[in-house]
View 1: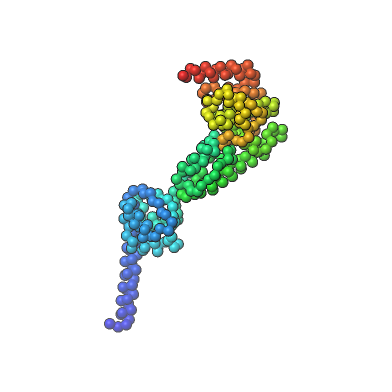
View 2: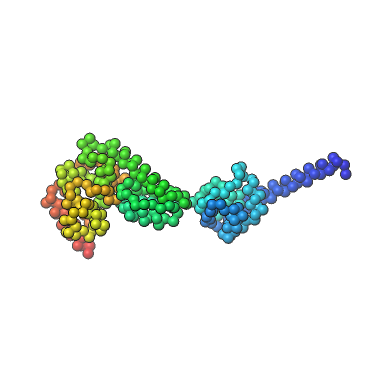
Amino acid sequence: MSLKKKVVLLFVLFFSLLASIYIYADLITNKVVVLEETYYLLNKNTSQKQIISELRTKNINISYINWKLLSFSHKKPFIPKAGEYLIPKNLTLFQIQKILQTGKTITRNFTLIEGSTAIDLKNNLLKNPYLTGEIKELEEGIYKPDTYFFKLGYPRSKLLNQMKRAQYKLLNSIWKEKPKDFVLKNKNELLILASIIQKESGHIDDSKLVASVFINRLNNKMKLQSDVTLAYGFKVNGKNITRKMLKSTNSYNTYKFYGLPPTPISYPGENALNALKFIKKTDYIYFVSDGNGRHRFSKTYSLHKKNIKLWKDSTNKDK
C-alpha cells in the first residue's frame, strides 16, 4: 500500500473514530438518567468518582467513562460545587453536571416573626440545622422581622447582621419623618415604644391608635401602664399578672415608673414602627381588649371602666 493510501486510510479511521465518539456523546448527552426528583448533598472535597458512587445509591445510574467523557464537553472546566441539590426528574447526565457546575443549590429560608423575643430568636436560630456557627446572647428589638434566604452552611452571625441592617434601615427612615415636637428623644426610644405597640396589637389600625395613646400619655407625663412590659419583666403571660407584680419595683413595671422601660421587649415589625411614623392624632388616653383581637379606646377613665366591663363580660361569656 502506498504512503498516500495509508495517509488517506488513517484520516478515514480518525474521522470515523471522531464521528463515533460524537454520536456516542450525543447519545449519552440526551439519555435521561434521573427517574424521580432526587435530593443530593455534595460535601466539599468530594471526588468525582465519589459523586458518581453517591448518585448511584440514589438510583441514578451513571458510568465513570460517560461521566468523564461529558465532563470535557462543558464550556468551562467542570468543577462541581458543594451544597444541597434537588435534582429534577427526567434530567440527563449532562444536565446533572451543569447543575453541579453552576451551583444551583437549594435556597433555605428563616423567618423572624413579629413580636418574637431575643430568647425565641436565639432558640430558633440554633435549632435550624442548615445554619452554622455559635451566637451569643441577643439584644431585643434590633433585628427586623422578615423572611431571609440563605444557602446550606450560612453563618448565623451573618444572618443576624442582615436582620440588624434591615431593622436599622427601617428605623432610620421612620426617624427622618418624625414630628418636630416628637416626645421620643432618639431612635432607641422609638424602637422601645414600637416593641411595646407590637406586643399590644398586631392589627395595623389598632397599632396606630395604640401608638397615639402611648404618645398622649408620654406628652401628658402619665405612666404608660402597659401589661406587656410587666409581663416581659417577669417573663410571664400577660394573663398571669398579679397585684404584687403591679406594685413591684421591676424596671419594666410601667405601672410603677414613668416613661419607657429600659430596653425593647420584642422585635417590632413594620406595622408597629410605621404606627410611629405619622402619628395618628387622637384624644385617647386608655384602651382595653374587646375580646376579639381588637381594642376599645377611650378619652376618659369613666368610659374606660365601661370598656373594661365589656371586656370582662365577653371573657366570662366564653368560659
